[in-house]
Length: 462
Image 1 (cartoon, rainbow, N blue to C red):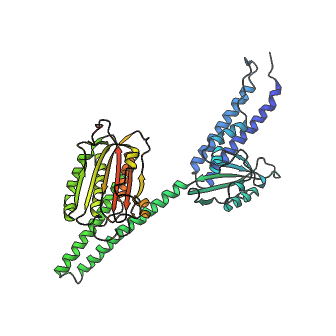
Image 2 (cartoon, one colour):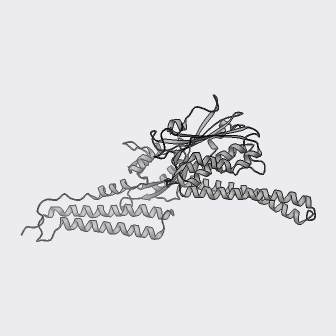
Image 3 (cartoon, one colour):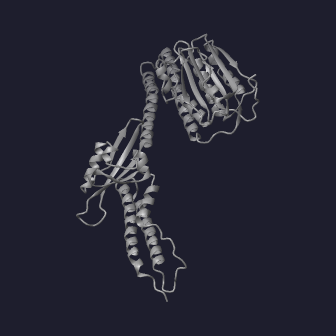
């Protein structure tokens, strides 16, 4: 009976050591996240147990393969499984989180692909200070190279793009030798999206509370007055009740807009699949707004073909028409004119960059754009008013929540500042586009375009 070659025994000891190194590195990464509060204790314990189980399974498999039972003879030489360092490198390459190992004197000894992409590292990593010029992080790494632990370090950059990063640094040694040099494991967590979401939420709450605080304060003041000296004054009572009704309607509009915006955002990832005739819809919305149009003696003209089929959600497209036409009427001077034009069968360039309806000198801004190619055709809705126009500096912020152009914040019927934000989100959901052209003193043109339905006639504009 043949005996297994004893020359294979040293390789078994190497794999035992390397397997332990792999498990230790993985466990250290998890422990670092647990220490800094990124993972819970239970999740960390389960993950470490998984690492230990997989490492044990790996070691037993290798040992059995290299030390078969006396009666088992391999038919042919099999390729040995990857060594421990190769497995560790493979694991680090798959991590989507940037991880670096910094050796003595601050030289980068190892960096996974996520770290190389995040920091823009070349083939030769070099020193950490040459690619990451953040004093707080470099000080934490220097402390870790002395065997000291510290809290995570946060830093932000504004160029070329805004980014917010949290750095976790932990000291580590490759062996139990107390004379072995310390190394620093650096884990970078990109928290830009989290910071932006927190800022947007804080701004939203601040703006919403501010918008509600004014009418609530007015209501509280009028109620107190009516309970006091104006209790028996019919003229004052009627005046105050009228103002209170205006403030109540203002809060109602704000709440309705907030609910509408929430519903649109909830379904934004799902594109609609219905068909809507925008020519018919425009006529219906104009009839609904007829009292407001008559009050200001606005001359409103609708230019539309017999049919203009677009892919969309009828209720949400109605909101788009309501917001755009109502704004045009609201911000136009009395006895001026408003034009609503429906243009089917337009290519993207024609829909997004048409000839200016305001003449030379008009400023244009794209507030939303489709992701599809240029071959798709769209139905375009253009609403032109003869208002005061919008300054160029205000155009990029028109679709921000609660943003209103200066001079449009007074009066009982002022807007909530959410109308154009709602339009932008609806256009995004419909995979369409949203642009604005404006010239101070000449008016504005708001354009929204939506994918044309497959059954739309090619010459529907004629």
